[in-house]
Length: 601
Image (cartoon, rainbow, N blue to C red):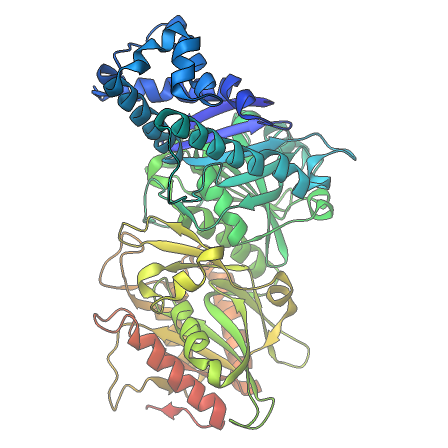
């Protein structure tokens, strides 16, 4: 078994290898990985003062006792218990029915112990024609698929040889690793000062996921804002290459090298459902931004109590960011939002207006309205404003009317003004990071074969789902509707579900105020305000953003874009599902009839 290391990180187990593993059950039992797992289990049993060892009548404290115990397991993987007792003197205690039953319980609990961990496998490979990333399907079959088969078979064979009977119900549970990663060293376009710190860290080239992947990160909320600082947080870092992996992410038109510590491997792997992996050519060309997620806390403490920071390195044309390796930052929102902050800043510097919103291209069926009627809708708003939830409501109830719905942006994107004066919008992510509570009933289960679910037992439980293609994200769609997602106001005569603004100034006032009813996705509560509902870049570059926003909203009114607000009511108790649905129905009605939106003075 070509395992280099088996590492326990809290409730995670990470297996690293550079070749085939576990071609037989005997090889599995002889492996250092199995020996390490058994030692971990025995250590936990002693720590918890479990009565199980007393029931076995075995101490299993010395190396000799553990070797004898392993020999018994190896024999039971091939022979019935009676034969093992006759062959191995050390197995004589299994002739006692009570101790034999206790041994069976031990095996069952050991199997459950292994499966209780979030299990990951990292396949390290050297570049070249035989590199694993040149034959990923074969590499995953020879490692992850093989491991799952051997573990499950070993468990079943031992239990059947102990009990002398076969189960009547077989459950094909996940017995191997939940995630596999092929990591390869690459020559990248990093400037020399960054290559000195990061150059030895391998790049992820393929990821294998067995969904639904359910993980429980250390925390489930994000706090504070990301600070722009005047000192580069990366240049003095010391990062052991063996502790980190790099996910080279396509973030809209940009490439961001995301370096994450293996303690955050579950969160780092989940990026695969959110951002497309960059190509070898993009890696070679170098990044637009660099982000270290899991930097040494002692080196980050100089940046204050909440050292979630980024730096604008004009000299090298890069943005760089870092977040410490602490449990309080072990939330997917820190990984996602910092990456998008870097995107937003770069887009502003290139003349595009970033937005915090969800966008879809919708084409209606002929027969319902004029054939081929299409609309490009952008809903802008803060976290939990109901943006993604409204678009999902379109997907659920709109099957009768909608011929095609393409997600362009789920959370962030950018707008440019083309030569004809039109607003062209682009996305960033291929996935969505959505609150489970706010999804249409049953939707998450319909998509469970692609889902990564986070902390389902906690407030702000989330799911990461692929929802778009990189082609749609990058295509650029001319806007028809630019709407602010208002989740906090009741609907009445003076406050219609869908309201159109009459001037750029009126629109800018609402968008700039950025009001939202917080729903526990961050540490904020109640009605809160943030500049343009987007704390991820615009406040740090306010003067630049104000200029861009003024130009974009003026162009929107000149070019006939319908600018207004959509009252989703997601923040009002009792409207978590019905609010976005009714908002979606009202918007669909306007699109389908090419009707006028109500204007309120």
